[in-house]
Length: 404
Ligand SMILES: Cc1cc2nc3c(=O)[nH]c(=O)nc-3n(C[C@H](O)[C@H](O)[C@H](O)COP(=O)(O)OP(=O)(O)OC[C@H]3O[C@@H](n4cnc5c(N)ncnc54)[C@H](O)[C@@H]3O)c2cc1C
Image (cartoon, rainbow, N blue to C red):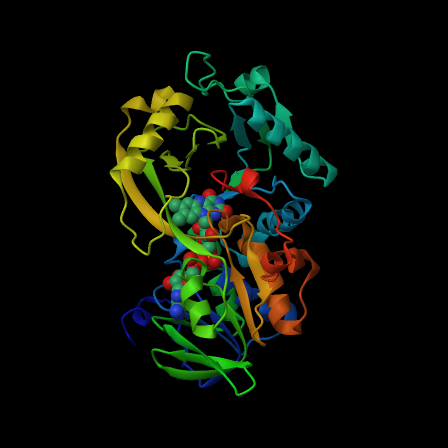
């Protein structure tokens, strides 16, 4: 595998050592963030990030870049709010322009039950200090005059959960920023190296990994492979309730800035924003089937276009430019799985479904703490793998499904 990907990096290639204090599997935002905070917060730099493809090849390079913290459960709200705090200072900290645009995020409600859910979310958000509230039709029309507020559609807009801090920022800048920061602190980043096995000693403790370039010893192994989690967990003999679904998105040709809010409708299963380049970025819910196939489908475009035009009919004459698909590691309660796995020294950062980009910063911080100290940080304790057996789920479906 050597040469194919490694030659493309602009930094000096590191030698792949036989042993590291920490091996991180997966060179997405979560893996790179974990490596960066291990070095920055704990001074642990004998660390390797092993990426079978190229940096950001997974969900990190395919997402629609929405970040927000207006979740439903107190556990989720606190966790994502910490990520928002970290994101706000990241351009300066990593010296790379993340182009964070604080547009404001609307979760549109078209049914009575959705209005009730958005009201409940708004109240819980405010109790925990997160700026978010239910607004009615008049205020929606004032804040976003581009939205179609007609009553003459199948599902007229009744209300919205308005979250002013909801933002977008460059996903490539996040992963490259963390990668560069980690590299300059001494972390080894190896592209084109695939983990093929998790090595254990006779007592079942994790002692390293097998890779396409031979075995590597490790004090701690962190799996941050999102859509590939079931494969890596199989190697470790760890069972999770994760299923892998495709999620698609597309962009239109660019036009002058017109839409200044992020629009999400869980009832219509569609979301729309306009990028800094002027493209309209449109996505939907996961496909209902499980697969490791990245093929994009016409039925997704057909369904998303129809629903997006109900919200913003002005888009009708725009041409579609690109369509793509990524994997989503879905959990039964739409919350992540983080921390201990039952295999000593093998930690998991997974269950990122359609919502993991916004968690990149807080995951990096907390997984680094977990790997450095062996203790579960309070913020991620509710997301432990054992919660499914203990019936202690963290139900976020109402806030995380198409809402990203
Ligand atoms: C279309 C789409 C839109 C989305 N929109 C949003 C959004 O707006 N907001 C949001 O918060 N989230 C969104 N998401 C979800 C988000 O993209 C992911 O949850 C997040 O990027 C996961 O990041 P990660 O670093 O954990 O994993 P990834 O970025 O997927 O990185 C995992 C890496 O592991 C590598 N890998 C896998 N197996 C191995 C192995 N055996 N050895 C070595 N390397 C391996 C892969 O090559 C990959 O690069 C979206 C996802 C998609 C697909």
